[in-house]
Length: 246
Image 1 (cartoon, rainbow, N blue to C red):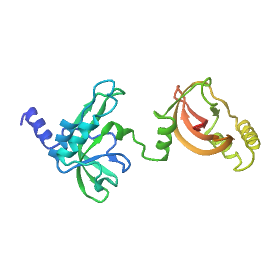
Image 2: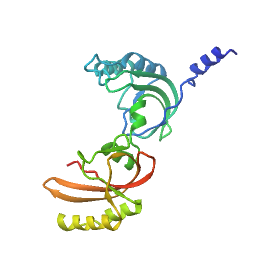
Image 3: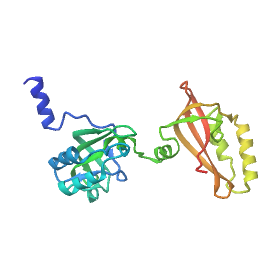
Image 4: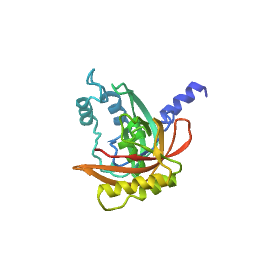
């Protein structure tokens, strides 16, 4: 069999497309379920589009919903209420969005109940979607996993000699008491554990440990987190970071 013929056979069997980085689709990430592979291919090929600029920040929703009606695919399948494992990718399509390209794929997979499915998922979004508490925290406070710390514009970040020291300093914050007392105890614990203000730079966060909150006024609180990280030279460091929305 020639190489071209072999490639055609692989494509026909749905084996030519590589699996995505993340082969699980969490039940809190949207996926379209279709009645057949033909319907899914038709949906992705004809009904996933981008509106003209400056509205090209997402898929054309009117075209998308027209496609659901035309193909029998659905966003609300009960088969997608548990984690789906992608077993095979049978087609891909990349759409040029204003914020960067997004790739969608047609997959064959199975859910936690063992039901076999054909569906469409945003591969780009699913790869980035958080799977655990640490990833969810990162997505909220340090979206790309790298803290670009600028002391001139951000709340102070503290650098500690060890992760154990950072954790001990955060654990030392009393559970109760006035903000003045709790901040004083925290300051003493930072000194005891050798923590000082961090230098500006890029820190890649690798783990999150203790968290303690200290009220700082009406609808205001500092939320101190002990973190493990690497600095821009690749050295392991420990940080205390204020993950507060206020």
